[in-house]
Length: 473
Image (cartoon, rainbow, N blue to C red; front, side):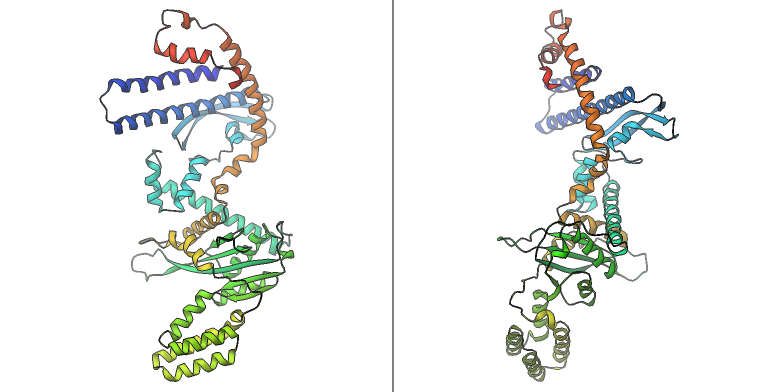
């Protein structure tokens, strides 16, 4: 009943704002803007009243012998409706001396949280597609108060959360020997990896440098439309050893790696990429076809005869014929081309085990597109420069998005810590509120029959409230 009485003036004031627009000469644009502001103001006020009413309920339901009320304090939070400011009570536990805001604990508010989880989720999702400045500019159109730093901070916190979780899982699996929790069982699994270099921040006078961001993708195969099945993505700025251990730990949360009979391992032949074969069971190396074709074009692009001869030898899996074709091409080439042919020969020799065709081999080669879609398209924008930590945080957020797990970065998981408690309290609160609202609404409303019965706030507000079914409450 108290909540309804607090909401009624807000409803009347909102309707007054809307009705006042009838007597103003406004364009459609101006009218739309005024209505939008009124709706935003209304939603913020309703949310403030809900939070304060919930805090009142927690105060009445607490054990007064354990929780002693100290004072009340205001808190400001930026939500997807706008900035709200509400009061909540501060308590002291007489048994332990701990001091808490019961409302903050019940709803999962962090101590210095300034942005709601829903708005934080929108910030992160938008920042994965556009720059931080652009994301803030877009959000400001309907949420005043959003700044570039608030968007940046949301991504940094989400990326740091991902990093800590990945490192914790890495320690559990590789340091403490804890068994993985993956339940999906497949006989074959594909794992591909590569890296992308993004411009790094530098101080005045320093030489330009770049940050290497690594990315790994694991999947079960391809659908009929060519999409990757059960794709899981790991990315970040880290050493090769940490990258592969974290990638394996990530895969172990989804798949039962002990049941994998063959793991097709694809890369471009770099030395650090081959280190991953040590942490995946039954790994079979496959050279990425894109990089193989690129190496052939760079080495033999001007010699169509040599290109056809070497390509045919590779398809047959005959290393002697590959060397023969390269020697003949070397004799026909100039000095600069001869160096490229020598480099091509070393590349083919070092990766020959991953080039030889196997009858049951999977066709890999998805990593180049994955690197572009998950990292390069967002991080290699014109003028963008990154610190090591900033690049790592954003890469981990982008990897979570690629794995279809972006929603868990919004902080909603932390708010569900006391979900059952909140639901139980809200159910009891809802029953009491329904009874109170029903008793109040069943009572008489003199205004409906008095001299003010013809006024708009009585005809269109009080009369409609009196007709509401109790089941709505």
